[in-house]
Image (cartoon, rainbow, N blue to C red):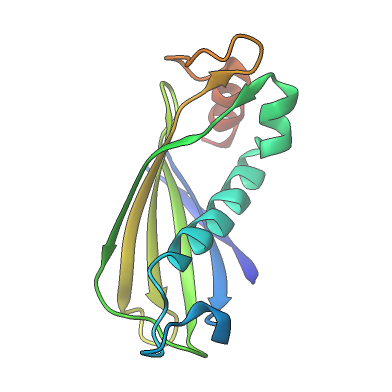
Length: 146
């Protein structure tokens, strides 16, 4: 996996990671098994959160967990063994929840392969209650990047 700096336009913060499809990623048809896309999205999401300065360790230190409560994937074209793909994660909401859009595309042709979206909600680790606003530390770090 290689990471690349993303662009910050129109209040959107993005980050991209490069993934070469490995043998263990594919099914007997030699295409990426659908469940592995979740791992690719997680790689891009983790790097995006690191760029923002709000990693999973930072969330924990602030007293919050952010479980994924919704995951959507749309498969457009298959990725296959050995293929280099890029995964772009773009933060689109951060005040009441973390919502991230994803695009997986073939590096050589820029052909879109898969689109996705995740939604994460803040949970106070002491009370185990879902929060309907993101903690101020996240809002401050996103604001600092805009």
